[in-house]
Length: 115
Length: 115
DNA sequence: CTTATGTGATACCAATTGGTGTTATATAAA
DNA sequence: TTTATATAACACCAATTGGTATCACATAAG
Image (cartoon, rainbow over all chains, first blue to last red; front, side, top):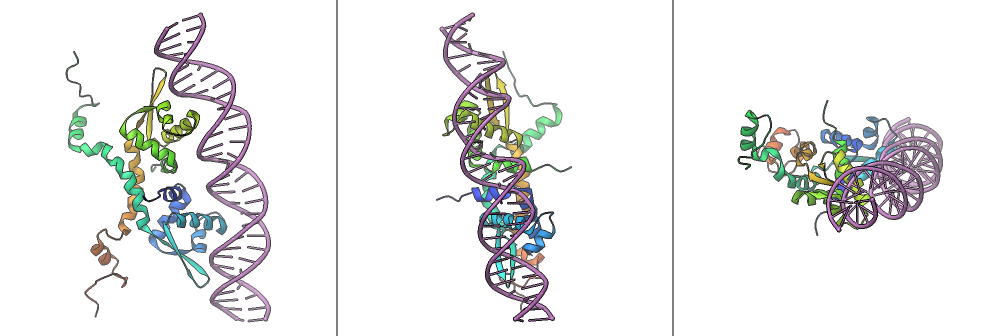
């Protein structure tokens, strides 16, 4: 039925993998090229790339003996959509009201009659 | 300097914790109340709540002998902002503009200046 | 052909994670 | 006071994770 967010969030939960995504936003890279930017072995980088692939955040295509890793940006959307559910509760959704209240008062407290 | 996204993404990377966030979007809950909704011990739930707290996704206040867990929705924003960087590359976002900006690439859909 | 390069896959290790169970402590109730 | 409740803190365990090292295989270059 609904999209499984788990592989996506799992892939995003590691700083190395988020760095890789940023790199691939600039350009497609082979495994070796990605690994050049990190202080770890190609094997370790390959594992990260596999997890990114399982989260469908990247696509991997073989060209000769090289594996080209490319960003698959649309796979990020379901995660953003899920997180944006909470936008409803963000403070600035009431931006006008809140700004007005906070601009003068040191702390928001709108109790008028307490009895 | 910049906000550390790691505790946030780590907290979001577990389905139980994401479920807890959804529950807390409806209403604040004690640990025991959260635990009622899962097939695991209160201790396990408490650990998840601690990780959510470390990611600042929830706030915990003691009331008497109870610990009230409340959603802290604004903590989700840095993660959304980070993910939204990739919005630029989404297919249906500003498709025309994107084609214009990256006009080096001839692979885009219906460009008129082909000749 | 031989050699070098890029990758895939595996075994292995240390550290972390998700979970249980137990104990201790603080608070509410009787 | 005694008793029950809600949580905190800990030890402990199995499974997973991040990493290395190694081997095998496919492809490019000589």
